[in-house]
Image 1 (tube, rainbow, N blue to C red):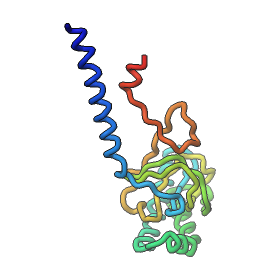
Image 2 (cartoon, rainbow, N blue to C red; image 1 turned 135 degrees about the vertical axis):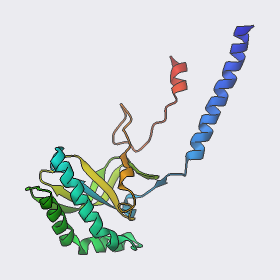
Image 3 (cartoon, rainbow, N blue to C red; image 1 turned 90 degrees about the vertical axis):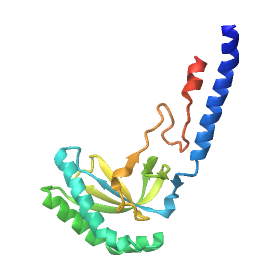
Image 4 (cartoon, helix red, strand yellow; image 1 turned 60 degrees about the vertical axis):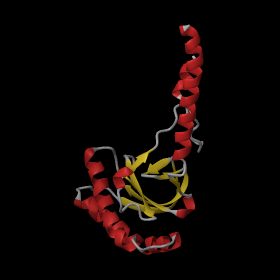
Length: 193
């Protein structure tokens, strides 16, 4: 009697669990916002190295550059306007980055480049940035071999909460160039054994 009951109840519970899981997954769709790479401009600061001093210099440069750009980009309505403002301010951005690094004791050169650069899948709060090439203002500190910091200059998300910008971990064994997210169900893995 007990085995018969398990044979009947277990498939019903499994069906209910899987149906509920799919319902939650589908209900969550649309909550995140996916941005196109041509709709935004990123700020990317790469530290000289991973040493504590170089990481501190990176954050000092971040603070100075974002404080300078915040009022200039706050009311910008289009990516073209943002691009024009950044281009017009290029020398000032570089000067401010150099001053901030020097004030932190960094004796290495500071460079600035603009262009389209490759980025992995990233999330910024509810904004999901798929992997791809993005227009970027890139500040290179020294050898630029350390951990980096990034945010979105336009739309102006750098000035809201940079602490929520986190990398989305890659799927183990997956293709790093793929822009598809693999969804795995632990229950299916357990029953597959």
